Image 1 (cartoon, one colour):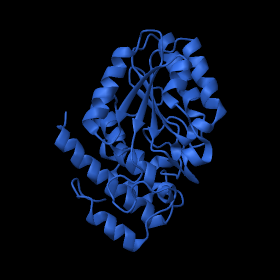
Image 2: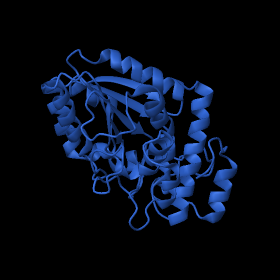
Image 3: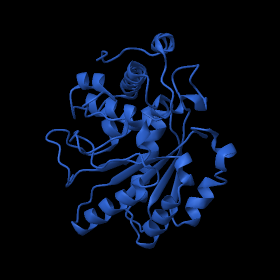
Length: 281
């Protein structure tokens, strides 16, 4: 397993990939991707039991991951590529015609690592619960993981799924919410206040943990605690505090970068703050 310093170096390269991918096509969602970089690197390099090749859609005896807030696909694509699901060079095709790397993850292109099309916010938890129940029926002890945006909590389907998970004791799922306090139109407080998010999930019957999503050591430790909570009759939610645009000073904590790609000058400035550690594609 890579050391924490090695994982942080991978994070730097992933952030370079994110800003380059989005800038090249002047499209995409870099802010949330950069804020969740430590989470994805932790999941795919340390936490999950996975088999990149050959990739199987059913994921039998593997941990499954579902990205509900599919617009942060750049970070997922970068990590999947570096973990060997597909060639790193393919990152250069992001959001281009006939690319397998669509703006939101899709299954029609048969991109290894992607098991469901996502990005229509609110749906990912429902899909993951179906997968988690299937694992239980198959006596598969692997975990199912999900990631959501905090703005996504404004979707009603999330809370229907939350009730279902607790009522049916789906205790092999570990979900996380990217709590950066920002969404496309501004802060979550201004758009539609989430109130006490921890109290909400507790009241819906979930075990709730909290983590610093930009400290990879803390991310790993928290998920390992969540694993210990699993199998006890309750689903687990991790509220993961992050900084949108993490790693580039002019992008941090600005909702503008939810869905705005850096221009050429901004890209150069961003790359100047991010160490190239694995080699650019």
